[in-house]
Length: 545
Image (tube, rainbow, N blue to C red; front, side):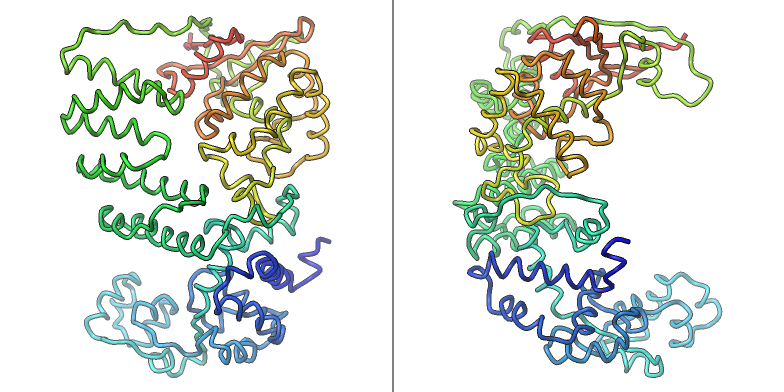
């Protein structure tokens, strides 16, 4: 029996762990309200603490006592009293009609407001719209529904707990369920050292800037005018690269929205000040749409001197002929892609369920030359197993807590630079042959632990041994170097299949395209890269006979 089932208060223990973690590592950054909560919460009776955590873990801030029935807590109303005295919840709050509707079920609404038969049959939203004309203002729940026999609580400390959750996780998308999944054994996490120097939030300003940034992000995603949100955006963080990267990501999204609104000048100004990958090529495209062709070409030529990534280089190559033509320049000679082997197959369409890659895999399979569908899983997994220690190095802003799926700065432009020495040590093993033992050891020792690179459902000993015997270390090094050059873009686009010839210690990667399919940009980049470095790769075009 797991400890979640053994301990009815497992969720409360986890909440205490969060408070202890924050108190030990961030006490110097907390405000008076946060510090007071961490000090006083453990002093409350256990049922009160448990009820509070149960409410905090659920969505919303308004709850009916009848919906908060937990055997380990007992009487909900008794458990709520100490929380009311602390001011962390409010008993019988004032509610708008909309808030009341969220708490009531349709039969209760019909009875409470004495709806006619046709009104009872209407949808809840229609009932609400009709009742708005008859009922104005806000009232306490007991005034709205005097004979309900129920109590309603408003969790006033929800925003406080959300801040504490932010300080612990370093983001708002992870929630308290992470603890439950960990306790149940669904997720396992790498143990990372947390020295004070590795804290993601280094000052109170960092926390406040994140909160302001999050508020702006919420307003933007709710459809508010991007320029109005932009005016409220906090200034760039001068000494927190992780926080600055989040700001640039939001700027990029705002630029995209301004493009959709055809506000070329606004979009250009946002992209101009944005360091998010792709912002510069979008700025050039916006100038072109705004018919500022000369300035667009100036930006393009400057970008071509030092492209930020292969993706940007590809976009620039596509834009250049169009801009040159509009300016009346002589057409430049097009760069020919490196030739790639082509395999054309004409096969009968299977009568049972099928998928294109599976059909080609089964057709090419030989006892002496097995074929595997791996797509992005194999090379990423080999990289993750070799470079495990580098990926999980405790650099500032990378890890906030013990429940991490990967570094918080994984997609930052400086992900490699901040761990350069650790990755260099891993790559050195590809030179002297130690990489095989490291990869085998990590496959066994780290089995099932969360990683942004390793696909445990795909990697097994058989596939691993074929890979280590048939793929040269030099080819692995080239793949890994390209992944590190742009983690976000280069973790995808790998060919669908890989075929091994163990007797000859060689392999071939195969990208499969069915009728009507075409190669995507990231696939083209990987194919060209492999061909340039003389790594065996081919494109298979399947037609149905």
